[in-house]
Image (cartoon, rainbow, N blue to C red; front, side, top):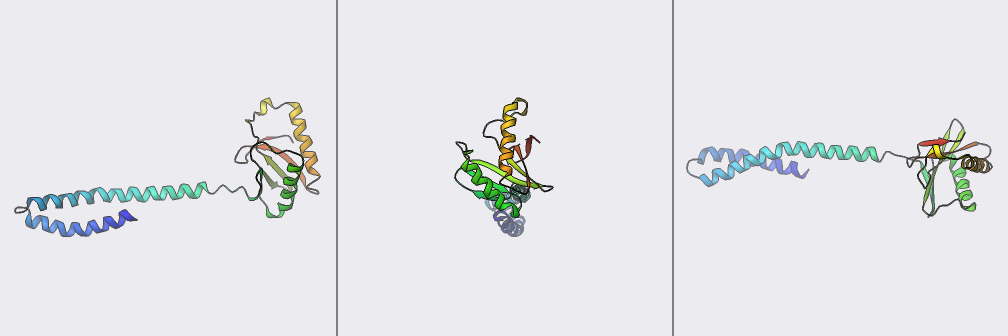
Length: 177
């Protein structure tokens, strides 16, 4: 916006200065140089306003798109964030957060989990604290994940629950079901 104002002021001066330029070109060489400077500045600012406009537009578009990641509503504590995508599942999300704390499932750094619902099934998306590789996920680890799922099932009755492992953006990368 600032550059547009400068551009408009310089454009008005250009009209005035260009008349002076042609009128006094022979007698006032210093004035001629100043007028040429104004002409040059206008030639520079005109494309710059387009660049600034497109840069601002691109930045605002990027900001709008990047803020579009909505993980749902959030229950927050010092150790755990529980996101839930449907407001009617808030009580289930609270019960899962309480379960998580009571059963010492908290890690040394803050964790985030998401409770989503698809086709009437609650899906608890857990982000691992360490790098996850499905090919090295042992049978015992799968059994523990299944045991966690079965134990949590009692806290979300009568709905069915599935526990999955997800990326940082809650995109599912491993499902035991």
